[in-house]
Image 1: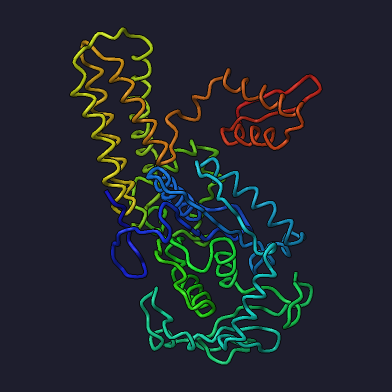
Image 2: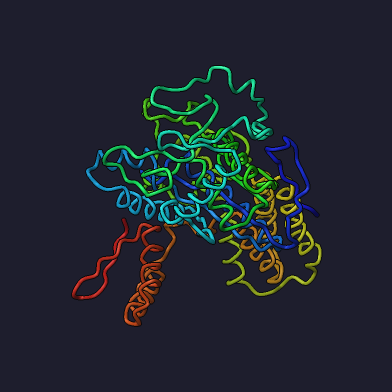
Length: 466
């Protein structure tokens, strides 16, 4: 079986053939870290973490890079409003992002590059575009000459003629053409800035991903992914910048996830339906939110409300109950059945069904349907008078294997037992004694994600449920 994925660039499903056999270079646009992430921000990390997990499950070595935009207009505005500097704001919300997406079951990227740590390569990239005639300096700003890139609009399937309708040069802009976009912004008084050949300033938004993708993954990558809202202009501009510089294809496959609505309305602060992940996971098992996101195909829009989340919880509970019942039966029954070949074959078929639907553009909605079918058959098997430990173990192994691919835990958060917590706390105490502070912090974060609050006192470490 072969993986096929929908490529936004070609508007069709294509056979996945990586640039290098057995390896995948994948770049996912990360957040601008000026606040906690909302539920819409959470969909890309969940979706593309699952894509990564599945690719790894199918035997690929995935180099997964996802950036942080840690300087831009939103960060500057937030810093001014809070009376803090931009690095402080960024550091706080990078930590918050890691905390939230870790609770959602997302693995860390191989690299999480930051704009502020890659300023040299961004400036070099812009200089090279100027030398090639694709960019120009104007009053301390640097702009990209959009019309010079003849394939501009190929990702969004728009022509230059379509794009220029309604465009105009805004007051204060120094560009030569309304279609040109900024690569470098001259700093205003009091703003955070870096020295450059064009004076003090900072990068435009689009250039950062082109420069960092090239640095960490090379001139051409396999998969570039992000939210649907990024396809234009952000990803379109990335293509223009990168391919103008290198003369090579920037990304072979483009994946975009659909929007999230709240009660069938677009999420916005003005409507008062702006939902932060930070708040949702205080009330609900974070794994439930992940399962909810994956219950709809990643390219389709998804509607969120508490009723739908509760329905999803009921479904996830059924799957977890089937798994728990299998474990209980295995631990508490003699091996009475002898003819188990038919059932073992059935269990193996679920794996093939799962792979078949996931190979079809990572269809997690259909993959979850396979899991429900497996749970139904498991329950039927548990009703039989005689059961085989071999079949029970086969069901359990299959549940664990397939759930690990979608990144959802088979044990609900609230089922973390007191003795398990005490074991983790002891491991943390041992790590602190051994001055392994990284492991100590990791255990604290793991417990915090499960709403277990630690208090280090003179009498020892105490804990409580948050």
